[in-house]
Image (cartoon, rainbow, N blue to C red; front, side, top):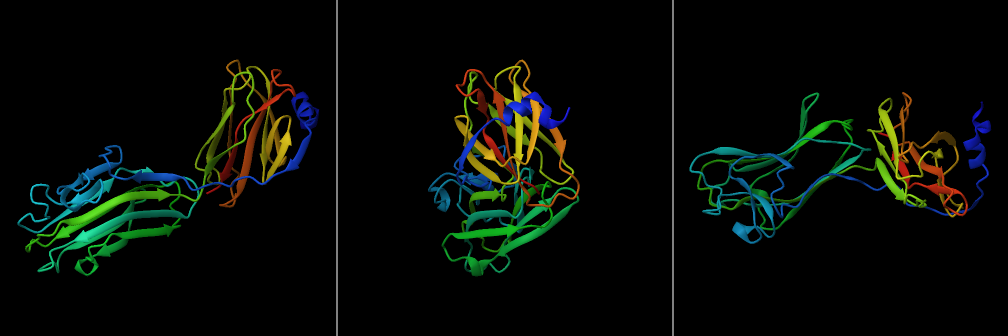
Amino acid sequence: MTASSNPITAAFLTIACGFAAPLASAQPQALFADDFETLNADNWYLMQRPWRVAAPGECGAASGMAVSNDPATCSYDAGMPYSSTLMSKPFVLSGSPPFTLRFEHMLDLDQADAAGDKAYFSIVRSVPPSAIFLGSWDVDDDTGAPMLFSHSFDWGWEGSQVTLQWNFHADGERDHGQGWFIDNVLVTNSGGWSDLGNGLAGAAGMPVLTGTGTLESGADTSLELAGAHPSAGAMIVVGLDQLGAACKGGLMVPSLDLLIPLATDGAGSLELNFSFPAGTAAGTQLYVQCWIQDPSNPLGWAASNALQAVTS
């Protein structure tokens, strides 16, 4: 039986679509974020003394911040030279590059003798092991004003597990400043799976379509639908562009480039597993939506939210 002779496909192709309207594109996704208003243990693998989270107004902290000082003295003096590390827990650079990393920071070093006091920032990949130093600061950067560090990168690390590391080195010579302050750490990608909304509720409520996978060439990928009419014909629509056309009381988001007839199970769910073909170019955009036969709607169909996928 050909796709066009499939009864679900035949029913689906009777859908009449109206005018097209522009829709939103994929937005960057946050992969790691912390504003230090509280200590989020899920984010941090190592907070080596004197690194800690200071409350707003404590020892020079303008808000909740990670600081490298002793709360008893509000200084980074330990009476000897030392190095201390603030290290995030590993997270994955998922979605599409370039990735953007940013944080706010401020230095308060001992102006009398801070020649050996240094602050370093790096990002470290787990496998294969690799570290890239992205910034270093010393007494010349101690202006008493907050600084914004922002860096976008595309090193071929997408899908890799990484950690962020701030290293503070004190030379042990009259270290009476308040040290290094870190705040509002954020790492984002340039897209990946993005929910574009525009679903049409049915008898069981709004069907929800989710996508999982790194969106890399050859990588395992999954589409899962939940909350649809049970034991019903369904059509996954895949497009290389947006159609954005009014259809059956809802909005047909993808262009009709590929139609995949399926059916929901008794719980109103379905799953489609596949791999992107080898050689799929990074940055390829796909739009996906699932339409489900639903007799409770006047025009006989319900629709999931639409997804935009940007390959890595």
